[in-house]
Image 1 (cartoon, rainbow, N blue to C red):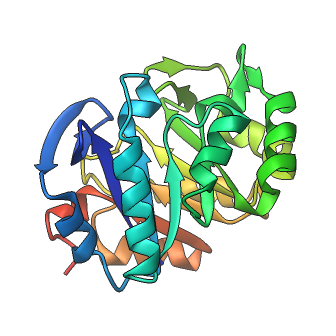
Image 2: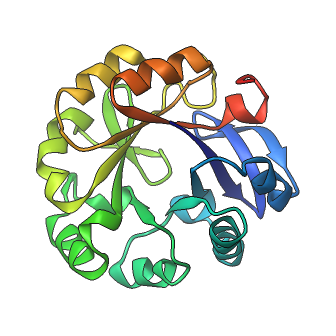
Length: 229
């Protein structure tokens, strides 16, 4: 299944290369949302909140409500969810699931206490843990900090605290260089949880290949550049 993404920075929908260089900007975010109607799921990511450079809270909330009510889409919201209180605030917008990334780790290790509290507060079924990987290592804080951990080694330990994983290949993110199918196959063998693949995806054939692996595909740049017709 293809999942379109709206990544927000400074009140605009953007597409970044490797999470840093802005390649594309859409000023009318709600027009972009309308272009995605008909898809079952939508990802809304607050990049400013993820990096600690502010937030797009009001916009995220409005997008979430509009996507659900007007377009009948299921929504995952992520970016800057670092506390249980914040997760509850975002939960008030009624997204189907919350994406948690950096906060899943503390001092280079799995943040077990936080994840346990989060699961108790919002429910395991509503939690998706983002495992963003660059150079085989997990990255956090808006992909600005690398941990010594790999996605594969932490997946089994994280399974009790989430219902799915969002695995992004940061090395290919925004490049449309093609999905690293070999890496995704390796991850598929390590967990029974659903996996949403992201990073470099550029063709319907790759999306079909991921589907055969039992994975959904979260796609940004290729959709914004109309490469998936």
